[in-house]
Length: 260
Ligand code: MF3
Ligand code: CO
Ligand code: CO
Image (tube, rainbow, N blue to C red; front, side, top):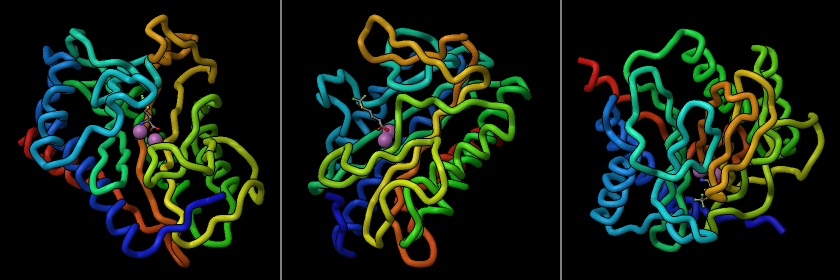
């Protein structure tokens, strides 16, 4: 069964997602060659706790940290470590919070210093694919409409879609039904209703779609070692247009400040 949220509940889920969005903006201010992914994790955890909330991922199925930091060919669920980011890397930073009983969950792939045009394009197309998916998150459409839109945009650019990991419902649990795959067919899957809150999170590979799991039990990487990108936003399905509950706006403002 799908959880259909009231206006009030959606307000609370929005608050949690705005806090995640602001946490990612704080991370954005610190991202540079030489910083370790564990330092970013500490900064995010402190920021979340300073705002009276709890990290949403820490302890989830035993996950050890506040962020998932996935570098270059790592797709998702990279564990923060003593790895120092270096010029030309891209790092997907996925963050969750739990606040007032509701989860926020949002991810952004950052460029570290100067990144190749090829990789920049991968990030742009992945982000556009997310936006194409969000356009379909309207009452009366089906999950497959979102999936198809994401897949079509990514594959039209010559990229491939990771199959094993999917978007999901979000609310009092980090992962709720329905699953929201990034590949599929129009008109298929469950019907979207006003008040359903979902995370749409394309994971798009420059090369082939195949992935491998690491020995740490968490990190997912591309089998061909080519780069992967990941962007995630939480949205509430609405009648005419999705109500986007998290935002990249704070991140963008932080990046603009930094590049001045
Ligand atoms: N944030 C991931 C998602 O977008 C899930 C992370 S689970 C964790 O769904 F345990 F790794 F934190
Ligand atoms: Co996430
Ligand atoms: Co998610």
